Image (cartoon, rainbow, N blue to C red):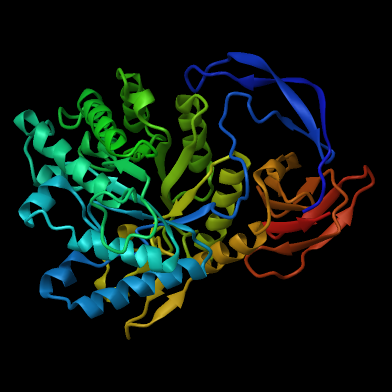
Length: 469
């Protein structure tokens, strides 16, 4: 890793809060880093420190379908399936995975009670996580994260708070690694807990719903966050608490819900990390950029993690394809890095075989791998992009990650001598002596030409590239 010159050179204007159309700004110091003028890291937005190597995660990488579990599965088959997921997650560069209350290990209070307070499934999940060397985030809540209304007509717990909070304490104590009532064979404590999931989706009539309901209101979900967080911290003083990931802050309902939720007394202080999701099927990553901007405004200096993000590889729009999905992986990562997003979790690991998908595919083609009709596994271009990006980020430090000014595109500098960039069209210009440029998706060289004004034009053919300078 090369040395880095840092010199204070002045001040600039940066957004300082308010609504998304606010004109408010405040002076922010800027520094010169390796020839670039960039914002000082403490200018109101959290910026990670240390190696970038733990940037990549997979949402529910280690999982087992409930339908197949209900049909019966042996301990050995479950172990092999979970181990396969762990190996494949590591192979694409992931270092984190998220345990879900719906997908797996389905660790919610109502299910725990219905299953005789068993930790068997959660134990199997955590053993597989440990064997793979993946860092866990465990989702915890009263009911399954996305299907709450199937289990209760009312979101509030009423007289059941004590029972629910007792469950939270028992779970955290079992997995915190302090040697008291720990899971047998626990090698490293679990310290990252996410409280439920997608409350704005619960509070609407579904992904296309335009109006809130009286179910899982911001006030109700806020109480759940505050009280659950207190129980988690009482059992583990080292715990890192995340709010249930907000489903979609790019639409009116989701954004207003997020604003209302973090305005509830105690909610902001109850969480250490702001969790948000960024799904889309548009031709660009504008929605991801808007998601990050809105949540960093709400975070007020706390970390923002994309705990779920993804795009499909099958759909009605003409641009959607596996190749396009692979390119969107590159662009999503570039945008996240340039905004200091500490961790990103791609939707999931496997697409089911085509015959097992819903008619309109839905979220079933967002994954990095696909299962073939014969039961085999095929790495998709999206998975190849993830793996290549992880390789490119190896050895980089967050102190050397910053947004780069590009004419006709977006870019982020990593490691002091490399830039990841994507164009708005087929090419872009950069004020940097580019030595070489290659397509991120293929590794093939692309043309670079020096212009009369001293800038360099990169003929990227519409794809993300890696620049060396």
